[in-house]
Length: 252
Ligand code: PTJ
Image (cartoon, rainbow, N blue to C red):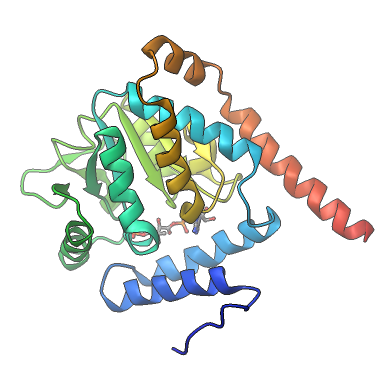
């Protein structure tokens, strides 16, 4: 594929597509991952392709939750690995989280390719696909298979760009879920404790920044940030923003 001119009005979006295509060619991303990006792009477009206040608030709550966690896990799928693998490794480092590869379209080859990719980007340990995995109850997709030392024992799981059944099942297990999803209507977005409605390309670095800002704060202060956060309100904010933007555009 040819180089994208720096002045191209949709350069960032085209570059993300190229990252996903590269990830697809290297066996990280599945075919459906390319389609999922299209849905994300549509919502990003409606939201004005920038980080909005409700996403900032969610990132604050998410960062506080990660710092309060005893066993935080960053769950990585093909799209996250391809779009911001390096930033996801940085995020895990910034909050002492374990990284685990967890896939919907799981093959041994993809799990291993993503683990190799993350190690090349600096991850020291990446879980996923070991023998003797545990199973998430009431979940029937390949995502039910999780590492005993990772997601199974986690108290907080951060995940991005996935369908909602696992979020619901993880919450039923008593875990807190932080989701990154551009679609405020998705089951994941509605089921998670904290949903960052923003592009992962912006959301993951924002979470790292918030972790840096909150480091050293008292637990009681972090707990106040978490308890003061309302995910329904954040999702409502995203929908209102889409509504206002479209109404404004329609008025010309
Ligand atoms: O790697 P695997 O095998 O685990 O499969 C991953 C995919 C993405 C194929 C799988 O999880 C899937 O099918 O997901 P869905 O149901 O298409 O959901 C993806 C969600 O992520 C949608 O709500 C999209 O709006 C959202 N999304 C897509 N791209 C982005 C995004 N959210 C944030 N940033 C993005 N770049």
